[in-house]
Image (cartoon, rainbow, N blue to C red; front, side):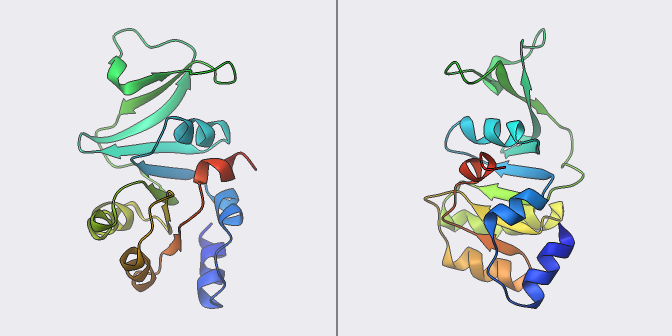
Length: 161
């Protein structure tokens, strides 16, 4: 993924969201509008992590809830196409490798998210989930050498893989 990003940045090519997504392996979600977002990413084969004020977690799809699992960190299937439960297992540290940070938070939170989550994770892509947009986020990402994507639903892109 890094090589693709380097080429795009060097020759100032507008990022192709599908191409970038296909080259990624891991995605950190900072909030999301509905459980279909992490489900679609997991079904496409990505390692999916979450971040909330309670810390980091790893997303998984399971057929049954693990014994004693906290149900507030699980989402049952909502239709016949979805299988099992979407669960988030708490991690005691930041994920080791993150290619993309996908954000569904207000514009005013983006500078802190970039400083405290994107850069420490070593992510090369900041992807804003629609309808979130940010001129300031784009400027900061550019200053830091991070590819910036907005206006494209990452879950819909994952369905194309």
